Image (tube, rainbow, N blue to C red; front, side):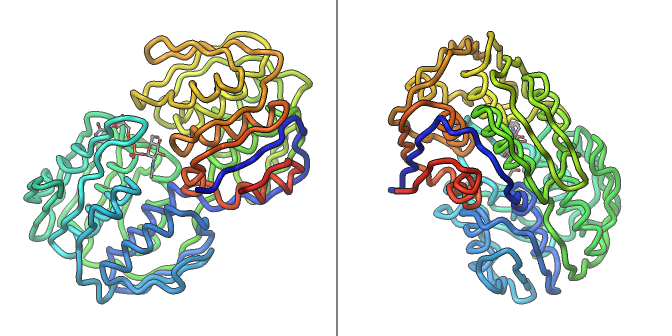
Length: 416
Ligand code: UD1
């Protein structure tokens, strides 16, 4: 199993290009199931999760050429197997995003239940309830969601909580439904907006994405289109944190600050100087960061996917920070590993109290989930001496060429 070895203590310096957004690419690739015409996608990140999804789509009968890369062509004309089996879904929860499109286009779907994961239970009841409101008959048997429907019917759906993939699944299903669907309490995440823009490019009638009420007027058919995936705001935020933690100075290219306000505000509160250009972000870190408290919540508030990386920078900042996680019940798995590097963190329910220390010290640590792994990388870059991070397959799910990008910024990092 691959490990990442990092010799910390080098301030990051230089520029790198940010990849396409994983969390936009996954739903947008699933949107190809909604049409029998060809779709071309560009700015796809080369990630394990994207490869898994392309494999899943190919298994359903979608023509995928080539089977990886930054630009991919998908043709679902002859798609004949509306099934997402357990062995693929268990490695990537986002596979649930095929449910809405399959049901809308084929009138049936058989999708394995994603089950729990390291960061919590993560049920999909809201996806199921929304599709039922649109007329689907759904049974959950032997670990599979069996869904059937004639043409889906527009409906008024109010989700119990803000759910990103739930909003995306329902929005995609609604594009081919008869009549209007209104999704209330919709997720406002920029990736939901990117998916809506792609659906509109395909001839979908989607209004209000980016607000908490999305209206979709169903059409008979969607057509093929070309679409470029938005830049990854979480990858951007992670490299900003890595630069901040090491006292560095970096310029991130082909990215956008538009969807990163809450993260950039916190980095400025921590003492970083940040300059924004049209598609670039420049960060200069202070000699010592100041602690910043935060609370995760749905967009536009602070993203749960950046919580672990901010925990890492608070570990080496001056002062005491409180980090409150409100989205997932078990998203402090990185705390025990950060403590191995010498961090001073106390957990009280959903709060982590982080007391900044003068410096961290390299050690052997283990990645537990995607963003937890990113926090260990940030901490290791700031730590003295060598850190070995085990189980970095988690990182490969969501960060394209991380070791190479960090090397380009001057970090001493090796994959072994
Ligand atoms: C998406 C992101 C993930 C991010 C998360 C929260 C993708 C592929 N993944 O995950 O990176 O961390 O949003 O911003 O976009 N819930 C239910 N029932 C449901 C659906 C959700 O109880 O049917 C709960 C979840 O357990 C969680 C909360 O709602 O506590 C939010 O989850 P959700 O927004 O659905 O997360 P994902 O879409 O899986």
